[in-house]
Length: 500
Image (cartoon, rainbow, N blue to C red):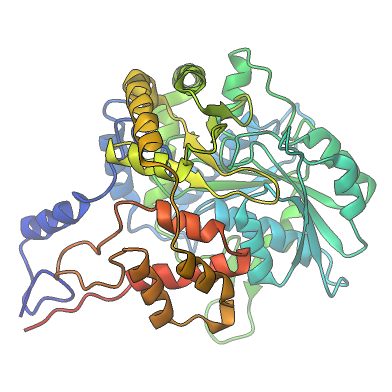
């Protein structure tokens, strides 16, 4: 029987276990070095990884379920909330002196809880709704799905990528419990008109949540560096809650986010409390009950180690990298920025129809750069998203050389053309009619190896090039996109069995 996968018949030495993990990790994208423009946030600070790993180990077995049993974790959580609140316009001497908050496991959890608090504050509303721009994070749709809250989406301008506050106001109904703004939105890095959105929400007597999960920790430091960051935090009247992720631009290990409320009354509906059973009385401020103290301690160590001066340096390095990358894109030929950078994002599209962005993404990946393709949506063009971190700054020149080379290779390859019969088949499908076998057949028709069995102890096969997949997804309705992706990923996520 193989001892490289599943549960081995006999326990393995520690070094062999770690060697197996390292072997699996060898197929991953690099998390350091500034070549991964999504998913990870690398400050390139020497010694920080070692510090956070040690801090994580110190509190890994501490349980956040009961703060009275582990006051160390309570103290660290309160310190993280206080730091986030002060950075985002709350605390003594501000417009939000009574701000409170909670530490969550990530931005999605923070957004789900913001929606829950708004919904549960109005038990008399039997069919609650939230209003948000189409550029708001998909986690709000997830929250609506989980919590049975309807989502009303407002379009954005194709030029500014921002919603019209008047359209937000028009979308508010008597059943609306929450209005959403982003600072900035993930897709394009654009900051919504928070002041105006919060005002129309306040006029309607509705809560306003500012999703600053993505870049909210960076914006205040950019403002201190003299960048023209618009008002977006608790200094804005009508903003009732803010979320900000520490595992993004606070550069803490995953996963730690903060959900802030302007005052304790607004936070109360966030809690879950249950005493009607014979066990301990359960009270949870967040979704999870048992929570490891490891990520919280690692975040606490990160903030303490970097300090205000460290974050200012990192923000300056990131700002410089954004400016230089913007110039690289402008010089590439056939590309244009969809918005002038105002946070930590570069987002560009193609001006030449023969320059296929999906092929370009694959060509960049072949040169060691991981970027994010974004499909065309409701009049907005397909784009490429770059999340820029401090570690990118030394790599910009090399990226510029590789981008020019990738653009040339993309032109030479030409746009992806799907077989007519395959495209016709895909467009004839309905989400309800899809089966795993049918999707596996589609994958085969696209030349993908999805569904092949990996050797025990090795990573599952993932396609090297995704341009044909993205082209197919963009050609079908959103509901079919969702079902196709569900089935595609399902083909990847299968158990690996030990075998004789």
